[in-house]
Length: 377
Ligand SMILES: [Zn+2]
Image 1 (cartoon, rainbow, N blue to C red):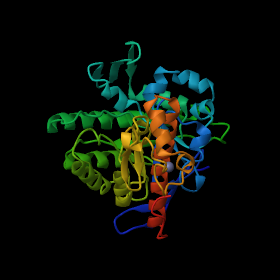
Image 2 (cartoon, rainbow, N blue to C red):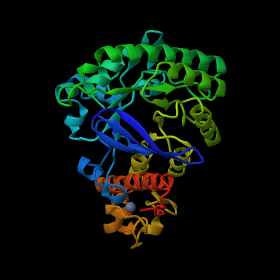
Image 3 (cartoon, protein in one colour):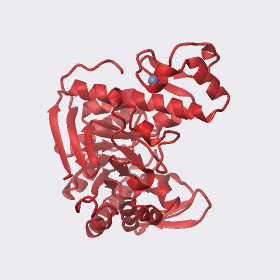
């Protein structure tokens, strides 16, 4: 399938109802992407992922982490297995991050030079080096539909000078990422199987919490004429109003006809707010991570399943939820599973939370299209 991004309708607030066509399928936007860190959306099997969400449509696209897959099982092995799609038996679209954010999260274990980043594995302390070129080689071998340029993320808070310097490095690395990607993209494992189609490389806007730097970063990246743009370096501990302002101010400088992706957000009300501002793609570990910790998202707010008050509660998690968990199991049973440390607790809680996120996005897409959606399904 040829890459394309079409917008059917733009609402007054800026939210867009559209469609992103990728080598492995079509993604209705705005979209939420479940995170499959190590080629697995934690505790949720692929066939279940294909069925959750409103109407049983399943997750349209998932994200995998380059850093984790590089360390285990290794990008070369994944490439020999036909790429991550075939390796994990996921035929739908997929996106890999650049590894940058995760490497930069290893504070104390890394050293940054203009050439790249030296870091130590969180698994065994072994030494590794990531350059923009290496990140591209790894992502091409993994073979997600969308790859991301290698970027540097600054810590929060960071001074203006530090943020500006880091942003300069990010722009130089984006250029190197693009050059290397363009010269090697035909090595993607499914190049021939998909009729000579290739991955697409998205840029990442940085600039910390400084509006003028965000503007400059967006402008530098747009000059590179990439097929999509992410807003990175947010949700790193700043107040929510700041996240919102940075997104709003950055969107102004990104092309309206290309997909816009905010990385690593957020709570259900946040993804709703950002989608209605004109963000087309989002990803977050929250639905699965919170699920494993017993925190459930519902149409009436958050619910902590470990509480004693649910011990004999015969109701489903959410009376209006149509997920396979709410249709079958009671709060009492889910609380018991959690309290007993049963692995099924993590699976069922994650399935409900993912369904809630996907159903939320389905409702927002219907609203943006001008069709009144159900409150939550
Ligand atoms: Zn449910």
